[in-house]
Image 1 (tube, rainbow, N blue to C red):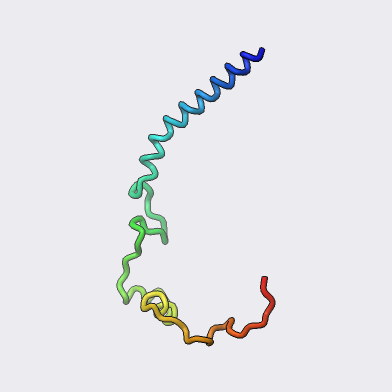
Image 2 (tube, rainbow, N blue to C red; image 1 turned 180 degrees about the vertical axis):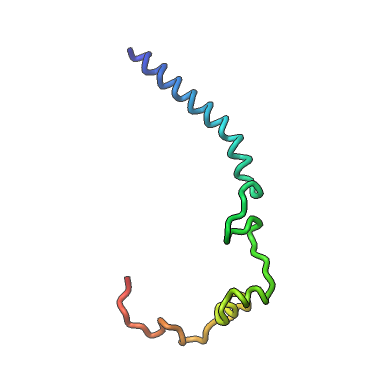
Length: 88
């Protein structure tokens, strides 16, 4: 009876290995960078290419200055400066 369970475990393990090896070829092609269609908001090339005019149309003035022109807010002028509110 003990050898019966060993054989069952062996057959199941062999089946799992075979399925894993067969599916590896299918996943390898599907995971290549160009294989997945572009979703809205997720560029396939990893970068969003827009002109400055397009960025200005999408972003508000402050966000554009911070993200595109590396601007920052004036020191000690943020909403949370000198805040005494309770934390999390």
